[in-house]
Length: 266
Image (cartoon, rainbow, N blue to C red; front, side):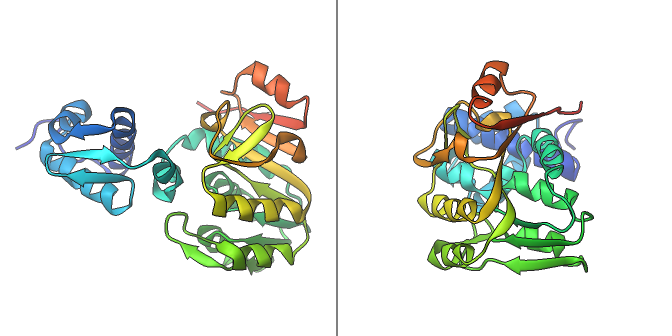
């Protein structure tokens, strides 16, 4: 029988461990199963089950005796990965950004996990018209009688669990809303970025459709870049970050736009 700490544990601890495994592999590149078992304090059998689940979700690549990281762009785009990282920061940012949403508004929400966190917070700020390309955001509002819900269709992306491509861009371009709320994978004091061109095109179309725009960014996404430029920070009416973002960067951002700093509880 395995000793304490060697079993798979609860669902919550399992999720945290799998996140730690993914981050460990990304840092190291290639890791033997035995090393992961030792680092996580669980049995080799438990690690094999974790790796099987992570590989099935497209987060990591398995090989005999170990595991390797997929390219960073693939890894960071995976929705299952994004849902499990920096949760407290995203929830804090979502709470602050939710204050921008008022009853009677039309709002467009992208497929980011930060905006997904916001969706659950504004369910009761009805009536609302909500437009989104994210399947999970549609699920959040599907049962709300006072929400007019518009699905922005396109080509379904399993990686993002959302709709992208030219049909989605065309659907977005036909709309005009009061407020657009998005996140993206990277930003510095002057520019925002994303690692995938298809996603950039949809986000740009969304931003062009809004009378006002807001960017939700947790600390892990700032002071860095990605392959494709999205738009300048100055193009946003509001930027919402958490209190883990360096004060100097916040001051620089405030030279370009209105910035709200969300306090992370705990």
